[in-house]
Length: 184
Image (tube, rainbow, N blue to C red; front, top):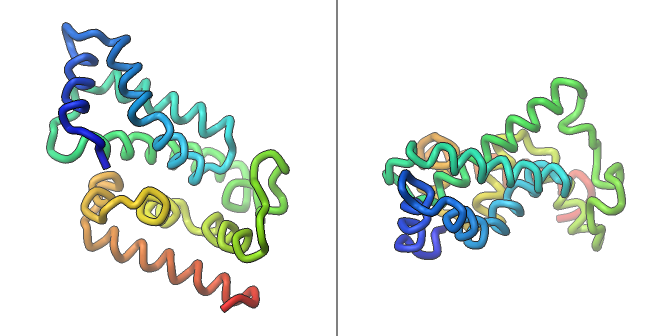
């Protein structure tokens, strides 16, 4: 997922002790900002929350840069932080609501929060929305971000086999939901 490990190493050095934190933050956001935002947005749906959680991700990453051990790609470490931030937000929202995040279907979302397209695309998006949070995380990492299972396992702190299985369960649920609603 990382564009350039040399750039990642430079960011890590700048954010670390004796570096140039301001320049490091600028590089971090420039390199990963859009990807992390869209990953979080697919999990929480709402623009404002996705922006806030993306900022929280970068703040946490900057303060915890010393905990990155280089055992996997830097991007996987960032995605893990972003995913954890989003899942915590979803859990907080679930505590006060009966359904996933207070939205039964895409049509219940405010118009500015979702671009409605053709019926099949809307149904697909609704199916993804209905996945349990962990399955939705794995699905979005694989389907939208194109992340390999090995990195998904690092992000989700699980095994590669479990990441594969979770993705396939998610795709089965999406396929079943779409079939239930008249699309083959």
